[in-house]
Image 1 (tube, rainbow, N blue to C red):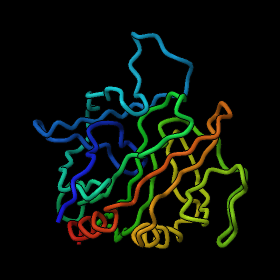
Image 2 (image 1 turned 180 degrees about the vertical axis):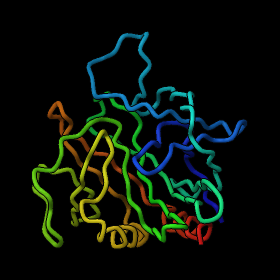
Image 3 (image 1 turned 30 degrees about the vertical axis):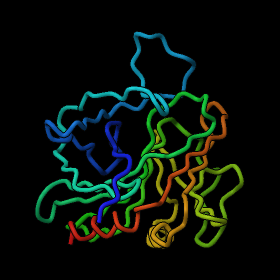
Length: 223
């Protein structure tokens, strides 16, 4: 059964290759495609996404597709978008902890997408909420990323990330199935570590409670 916790109520989901969903009227959910840059405190006239506790933007970008929220499992939410072979299904969560807490940035999201018509099962992507420094070098399969590279961390295992415009993906797509399997294996958390363009080390923690159930539902909806 569903274990209701936090729902994704707003924010931007406009990662490359995935249109930012516009949630149906009355659902209480709306998104914006704008990515705010890491910055000094902004004037009150400028609207920016904030870290935990602040109001989130409620403006949806024009020209985006409709998405339907289906279910919530622990910290993870399941959405679907489109019909037939164009149907996409995805499990999404927000970080439960962000460090440093004083750094201003947009809301972050982690999601795993299943694309029915393209036979994609484990597309891992992250919206960081700020621009990040890229990896020093491309990580070869089986090699460990450099200490300062952006990484996805599960326990003691580090996976290199490629970053662009505040978004991140695994450097080696062949690792996606392994990462999703490890996320489903009751690991307590996943940590995204990066260094912002201003040189600030950052860490976003995602709780994995409910992820296995969310991915099961995601795959069922995009068989």
